Image 1 (cartoon, rainbow, N blue to C red):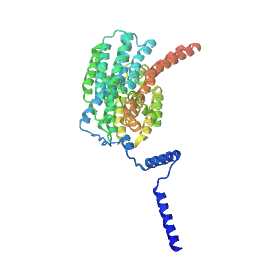
Image 2 (cartoon, rainbow, N blue to C red):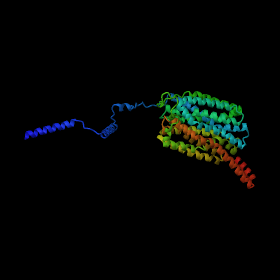
Image 3 (tube, rainbow, N blue to C red):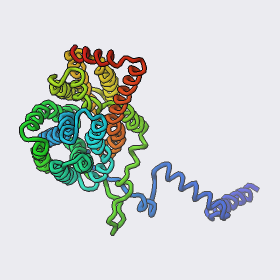
Image 4 (cartoon, rainbow, N blue to C red):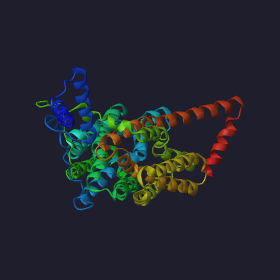
Length: 467
């Protein structure tokens, strides 16, 4: 009984082992579920074998780019400084050329001619910013050096052609479009190339570079006034063409250092990808969108003093007033502000630099409103000193903010599209201001004539000029 029972148990165990060794039949549904579960488990654990491993490319970590923070970068900084000085020094001194253009093509008392002539300077300043999105694409495709040298050559041709113009109409094209377009192509690469050589000192270096325009703004009004008296308008513009020739040589120093991003071109394709022509990544940043749309909204009155301040001084303080001193005050304090706030920006972490820029806008706006309220020349000097100081703050931290918001690989088009949107208020601001002033004069004259007080108005005007 016991033996029989043991034999039965042994046979039962043997049969169980045989059943365990035989593979169980699986239905197609269960097999598919099992393969799916195995695949999910491998994906979660990062365990891949066979053909799956061949399909996943292994990311090769590239060494992080280290900025030189000096070396050849100091030469590039000086070249970019000359670029800012030549471009914006000429633009900011347009008030001197404005008076000469009025005398050359008509009468300074002709309000209609003043409006038309103001459009030359406004169009020129606006085109510098309007072309910036296009310049950013050329900078990405051709590089900073080719773009800058080509732009300086175009600017040279435009300024030289303006010296042979004998009427105001062609001046819109030669000075307002050709010269300004060349300046735009030369200017923007000077901001981008600095990020190739500096990171920790980028704020200070931008302050030094943008101070170049302040140095030219201080010196050019006196130089232009002397040249206009001795050699005339045409020869003065030919002398200014020399600045653009030197700018061409300065652009040759822009040697790029940042590694180029991996190209996504298809084999055999000559056209660059659309992502490189139009970089949509910059618009994914909420901070950049707010910044890019907010700055242009604050700039409608920014360029107005540079165009109309000289004439305003003549009307209020007489033709013998030292008008050039005001531009010198703006230029000197703007240069000081760029050096101070550029260094301060290096200690401000991340995008908090935007608060510095907003504060500068507030002060510039208040000072602009104070200009017509100043009946003493000393008060006008004080206003221009403060305006220049915070103008330097606004200018010098523009590029560092762009680097913080979008990164070094996207900064070219980030700056380009910002400057492009700034072109609208920079262009229409001064003509609108001239129209408002002319309309206010007509309204005052009509009010005085309706009350029979023309004589009182004239006498009051004379007393105001004498004071």
